[in-house]
Length: 146
Image (tube, rainbow, N blue to C red):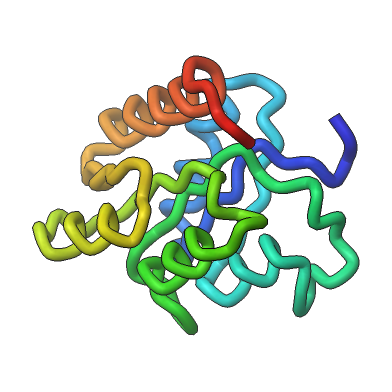
């Protein structure tokens, strides 16, 4: 794997959730390369190699995007829509990883092209198990077009 290739783009603004998710993913799949973005605009800059990520090799896209719904600058739903309409990124699986269990958020996410929707558990052990299973499924078991 080249230094510029990533398995996962994790888009999360909550520092505690970011740390927990990174730890669980790295524990689930050894050697997983994870890039992070702290807001919606940074996620799009990473994917489309603009802003602070100008010069990044656009051919090296993540195999999976974990996307929070409630983000600063641009919410996760808008980020998802932009990912799914662009031919360069539309085939990358996107999992909404959010604290929202609202039916309207779930429906809007699937309508915009989400591949999966996971509500973050408030129980630390359950959250860790969920993230491990998520990583194992999308990176080991799932067959991706990317």
